[in-house]
Image (cartoon, rainbow, N blue to C red; front, side, top):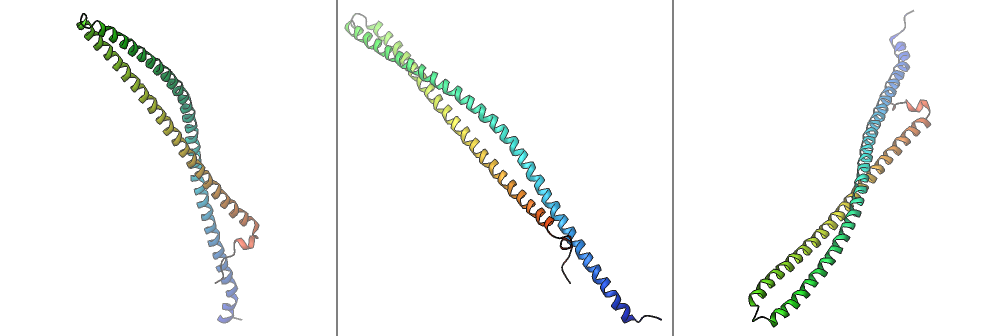
Length: 198
């Protein structure tokens, strides 16, 4: 006895509905998998950035250690410069004192030793000016070294802040992924693959 078209259509309706549910579940599963892949890709990029930042931080730490070592050397050099400046200033004062005494002596004998007085005065003044110029140059070098040290320390501080920001982003993304995985594991299997109703 042949079935009527109405009965066949009625029997096929549950099957069609299950097929639609299966297709929707498969689509939902595919979208979820793509989302997971996307998160994993982002995580890999973040990890690569963190590794690069760690490498840069390691290099910066070496640079900072070298900077500190150079700073220590520069401090010692500055101290030596300061000591040398003090010695030169005392020497200049001694020269000026000697020059003053010599000028007084020449003044007393100016009429007799006028030519000798002029030559000696010129030589001593040239030497004093030369020593003063050397002292000023050393003071400028010391100030320039201090400025370079300050700039290097500020650059290291900026790099450290950048590394901290990247680490915070990494921790935030890891927390998001962990929450997604926990939600997926806590849902019943039937809920994970059920699509939206038609």
